[in-house]
Image (cartoon, rainbow, N blue to C red; front, side, top):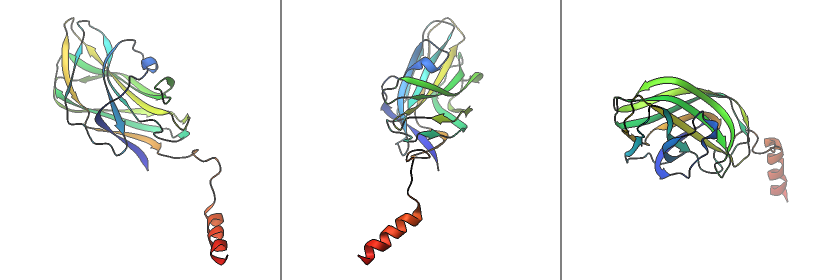
Length: 197
């Protein structure tokens, strides 16, 4: 089954934004993990008084997740919940990245820009990103970035709740975790021999 990550209230260490096209951030950095408890707390972020685009939300899986050395290609669906809206901000970029256990950038998986998703209303915002297949390390992590654009030269605040799911095409503990899986027939034969002995 494809891995689904649930955004949580747990604060993540700061991921490497090198895989995005941005150099500045004011991100709310949270853990998103399979089977996690959806966040319930609003986190207020403030875009500085500059008309530019900066990383504003970040979700990182835990180490060893997805625990696969072969990430499948396919669509990723990224969501987050706006709980305090701001008409002067738009969601313009989303990036999926592969980082190591220490959250150092390794590779870009997929990205979309020029989204133009208005953040002037509350509710769930989402976008779909086409991701490339990855040959990964077993401890590599998934990191998702969202970048917002400030259309003014004044500080703009927004409230985000990490309460949504991020859909991935990747199988948890999927292909490549074992390079030499034991065929079921071999397992059955071993069990039968053990029973005879």
